[in-house]
Length: 254
Image 1 (cartoon, rainbow, N blue to C red):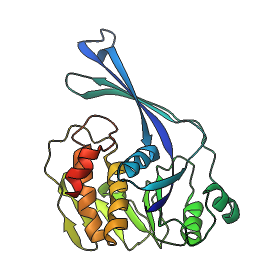
Image 2 (image 1 turned 45 degrees about the vertical axis):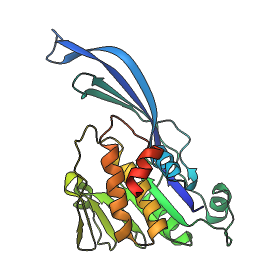
Image 3 (image 1 turned 30 degrees about the vertical axis):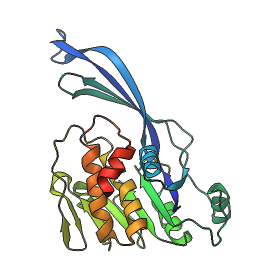
């Protein structure tokens, strides 16, 4: 079984579904009558859960503080009315290498992790200096998905199209996701799967998890990206943060 060291920011996603039948007479905003609530694990937890769906052995490091994102949604139209984020100040990771090995629950050995994946939402858990140090410290391939505008060299970088335009430094090995247009990597275009998009929340996390699996299975990013595209297409076909099922995995791989 392939082993993954996963590091990143995590959150709790709360979805409050209800009915909108009128506007607020005090202001031109809809009034939501709550009917039900769903609580899911988001950000790096979503990456973790989807990696586990692919059968990967994952060890995760994330912050102690709890970030909560609450979305209020009109159930009939699936229209998000409001999002409220509760984001406490996050304690940085700030591990020196010996302590990081201990935190990673695995000393460097022949049984070391096959890949390190960083899911960085830029909430304060990982600074640029920490990213750079982690890339230099890890013995093996590194995949980074980050909201930062400056990123270290020596890793595969996964960003969306908007994020790619904000990068301040020139990098090789950049995987650019473009939603329904597909993916650009190494001067090649990888078309997206054609699906009816229901909700894009967490699709990038699903893509990252499937990309990691595809790379570990196929050993090249060119072969991994189509797998990730298929996984993301399934994710956007469902509401909210979505974890791939065994049936989904069969559809992606076979």
